[in-house]
Amino acid sequence: NPDFQPTFKIKRWIGFLGFIACFGVMFKLDMIAMLGALAVIAGLYIWLQRQEVQLQSNDVWQSVWENVVNKGLKKIDAKVDEHSNWNPNIILFSGESTHQSYLLELGKTVSGRTGIVTNFKLILDKDNSKPPLRKIEQIVRDDIFTDLGIFARQIKVDNIYSGITNIATTFGFSGVDPNTIMMGWPKGLESSAEYSKMTETLLHLDYNLLYLDFDREAKFGNYHTVDLWWRETDSKNAEMMLNIARFIIASPRWNNTNIRVLFVNNNNVDKDIIHSKIYKLVEDLRVNVEIVIINNAVEQKPFYDLIKQQSSNTDLTLVGIPNYKIEKQAEFVLKTNHLFKTIGSTLLVKAANNFNVLDLDFTKYKNKV
Image 1 (cartoon, rainbow, N blue to C red):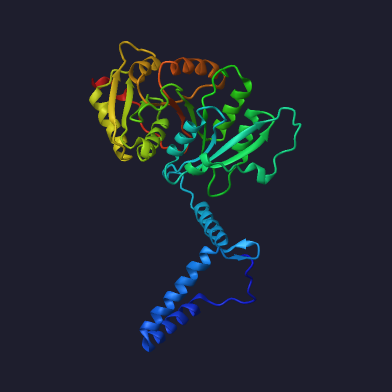
Image 2: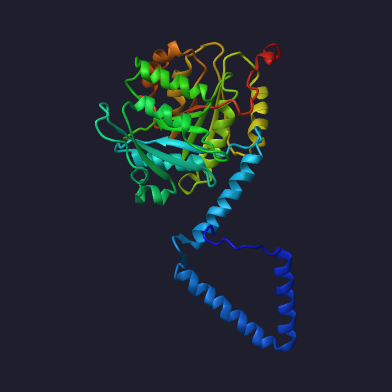
């Protein structure tokens, strides 16, 4: 405890030797008395714990946990492994819509058992007419967050997009740096320069990006079906989708989920070759899925048209965000909005550079058909 500052220190082994000596002497003198003394001490310990013993202004146990967290963060920060498994640390912008609870629910599901989710409520004050919130006012205590195990904050901003950018740039500290941004899919912003600039900054910061388009009618259906859509350009997105699928099936609501990986074969490659390759990739991450190969070499249907045909009744569809130039964002948003009108709830995925590249380029097998 920070309030306990002795003038000298005693080595730990001295205390340990004293414990061994006392134990031996008491055991020799009277074993029953020794057990009784241990029972009394244990009872006193439990009673003091229930009384929430405080030392001046600091709670004893709070200081203990702060010390544990401090040492843990130092160990995590000292060991940086770029190729370790994805441990989600999500910054979530859920807003105050009627379907906020579903976005919070999916955010917690995607984070798994060991991930961290911090939800930010942005209070818009365009004129900066009010002072910023005090530190204690920024902390949100609400049952909806407590029940899900989500940290919650609220911050006043003069612009939503610059506010998101500032939080993404500055929030976090060594050892538990956020690695994922999650929010609802912003409809009607295809021509917004501010939104384009925000997206460009988030990509530059190398965050994983997750956008949920929530179907207000179907919601998440029966929590029974999940589709992962892959194409040759999803070499990084594919691994992130598999990680998300692994976390989804580990959650109570989705534990009986059927997962499909749907790959679009645009190059007339033997289906068995593609199936075998994808099976090995999936097997490495130990996710049980059904693999569906869609031959599209002849008809060359647009990717989104195939999604409409195959996933119209799926409870949750995962689609990778391709690499595109920022000036093409309006076109991408418009096409994606049209897709969302025809399918259920969809999670768009853009993986950061620290994900492994899964080899989904099968063009080298094209001549073997």
